Image 1 (cartoon, one colour):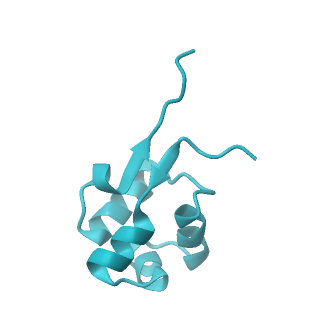
Image 2 (cartoon, rainbow, N blue to C red):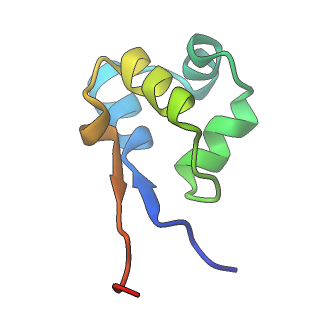
Length: 74
């Protein structure tokens, strides 16, 4: 199974900076806890809107939450 080129620091930011639970983050972003679990595990790349919601809920700039690796040039 291929991993997404989008990686994130949601778990670290959530735990270390805010102490927010997965459930609280999910509620703040209007998604399910399962969505947060999949994001943290790197199994899912969020929509742009959800990425902004997550960054806002964590009080962190988008670029500190998500990284994109375009891979080798084609």
